[in-house]
Image (cartoon, rainbow, N blue to C red):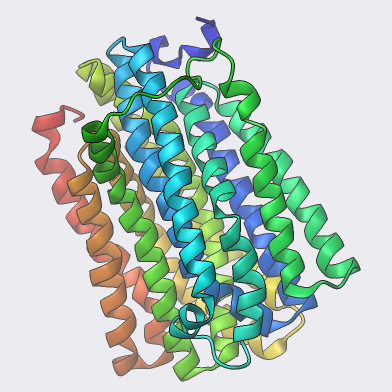
Length: 445
C-alpha cells in the first residue's frame, strides 16, 4: 500500500491533521465558490428576478445534495470503519453498493421532480413572474441530478481513500469548467438562466466521470468491484447518513421559509437579498464543512480500530481549529460585508442597501454555526446517526424555522435576518451538553 495513503498510520498532531484536511477544505470552498457563479452571473445578466428564481429552486437542489449526503457520509462511516478493522475487501464491496444505490434513488427522484415541476415550484413560492425562470433552471439541473450526486460522493470517498488532493484537483477542474461555460452561455450566447443550468450540469458530469479512472484501479485503497448485497448494513448506513440528510433538508426548508417571508415583506428583491446572504454563508461555512469531512474518515478509522488515544487527540485538535475558525469567519464577514454583497447587488442600489443591512445581522450566526456543523459530523463519523440527526433537526426545523416565523412578528424584517444567529446560539448550548454527555461512551475527551 503506498505510503501517501496511510494518514491513519501517521502521528496524530496538528500538522498532519491540517495537512490531510486542507485539500478537502479547499475543495469544498472551491465547489461552493463556483456554485456562487450561477448566482453572480445570473444576477448581473438576467437580473434580480433570475437570482430569486434560483433561490426558489434551491430547496429541490438541497434535497438532491441531501441524497448524496445520506449515502456518502453514512456509507463513508462504514467503509472507513471496515478499513480501520482491517477488512479492505468488505470496504470495497460496500463502497460499490453505496454508489449504485445512490444513483438509482436519485434517478427516481429526478423523474418525479421534472414530471411535477410546475406545481412544485409554485408550492415553493414562485409567482407568475418567477415560474418560467424556475422551470428553465430547475428542470435542467434536476434532470442531471445523478451526476451531481456522483460528483459529491466521489469527492468524499477520495478523502477516505487517502487522496484528498485528487478531490481538490477535481473541484478545481469542474469549477473552472463551470465558470467558463457560465460566462459563455449566459453572457456571450445570451441563453439566460437556462444557460447557467447547462453550465452547472456539464461541469458536474465531468466531475462525476473523471474519478472513475481512479476508482477502477485496484491500486487504490478504495476501488470499484462487484458489490455484495447487504440490505441490513445499507439500511444502517442510510439511517446514519440520514442525520446529514436532515441537515440538507433543513437548509432546504429554511430556504423555503426565507423565500416565503421575504416575498411577504419585501417582494422579489427581498428574496434576491436573502439569496445573496445564503450564497455567502454557504461559501464561508464550506470551510468548516470541508474540515469536518476531511477529519471524519480519521475519526471513523480510529473509532473502528478502538484506538481511543488517537481519537482523543484528533478531537481536541478539531475543537481548537473550530473555535479559531468561528472568530475568523465572523470577523471577515463584518469587515468585508460591503464587497461581498456587491458581488450580487452591485448594479442595483435598492437591493444593495437591503442585502448589506441584512447580512451584517445575519453573519452573527458564524460565531456559533461552526461548532454545530462539526458536532453533527462528529457523531455521524462515530456511527451515531440519531444524535447527529437530533442536532440537525433541532437546529433548523425547530429553532431556525421557529425564529423565521416568530421573530418578524416582533421586530419585522430584522427578525428574518436575526433568525439564524438566534437559532445557532441556542443549538450550540445543546451541542456542548451532548458532547460532554457522550464523552464517556466514545472516549474522545
